[in-house]
Image (cartoon, rainbow, N blue to C red; front, side):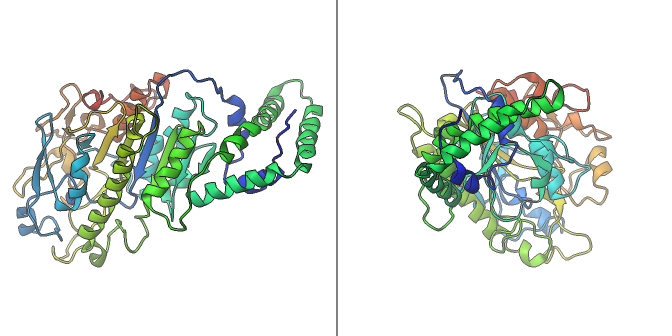
Length: 461
């Protein structure tokens, strides 16, 4: 029988926690099986971050040749990773330099060339399918022992959200958590809820299904209700402060409350960069594109603030937050170099899934590396047949072929596109799975019934 009161709490929380939570609670085993805490945190900058303003920049001679817009107008700097591999970076990401000892740069990461929309490529990254499906958050959490699958903060509009399925996900923003905690305390003082709890259990217990799907669903629902007291108790213990203003450090601190409380293994923070006037990355029009240096700098500074908070805030006596968290930072794709038949100094940019840049760091990940490259390094470079197959008008930069054995990009120029020749976002996800020691059956596959995408072993500790 359930004894903790929860009528008021349920009124407040059912709109935030998806109803399948009850079956998730029923299936959860809350026995701690690993001594070392381990969490996943993904920071997404939706809209399409132009990597030529971050860690995959290009010399100004491409702009002089009218191939690549460059509204920064400054030659990029050379950054050499501890593995001896290089990339060109702009001053826009200067704030991230102090953190590259704990993070590695992955350039030339190919998304899905057949998909050009935000939602499709967001789904490709987070579910492995442009049409969507079960998210990596749920897949990962099903093998851990928390009550929730995901603590998320997704302000504004997120195009891929309807495609990315995560049961038992909860809004972790400070305002939402404060409301839940307050409602929990109110529920504790509402003695009539005890009767409601007893009535629900009694009525559900009277329903008997001998076998089949109805019995399974009924049993899961009943078991789920039985574990709500533990959920309400943990939610009630959360104490994030609500300043009335949203900022990345406060939001990340709120997500870590869920981690520390044993409520979730995975966190997801979406920057409001897809429709925001101040932080718009989806710069199809020239006016917005000309603001990219300022936008990229601001986004990098916010990411740097989040990393600094994770590095300097203790999780326990031995570890910082970053020490116990594997972190992935990136967008759904990069952007084209320019638009057709438009002056190079007055052009916007479009979606480019042929290359992308990610930062990986934290627990289980080597910092300081540069892995992967992209082509169109100069105005005179001869492009591969594979590139021209996907980009006949030469509007886009594309990742170079990648050798997973050596951890190095290749200068080979394949005559036609074969996805397994390239560094893929699916290998990035499989590398995360590898760090968490999950079962191989959930690894992303190169094709239906095919082999798993290779793990990027050179970036793993």
